[in-house]
Image (cartoon, rainbow, N blue to C red; front, side, top):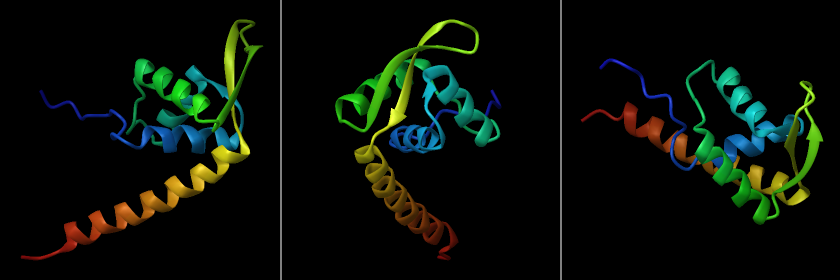
Length: 111
């Protein structure tokens, strides 16, 4: 099979959720759709992984959640970033920049 793997890279889902929610509060489906749109289809978020991550981030105090009506008049849990979540996004973003720069250096290295 010549299918490209579009799963979110292990360890980056939390950062992608935090970044997405830094733009505006959203429900789970909206978060998954936004990640896919912004990444131009490179990343697709597994719904089970997303739910587990949202629960973990809420328990960590990085997200607040409340039940609201969606634009389709359905009830959904909307998530928003807390102040602590914004700080964590900064930590994860700088860590990602450091790691991705290291990977780029390794890929450019000539033997």
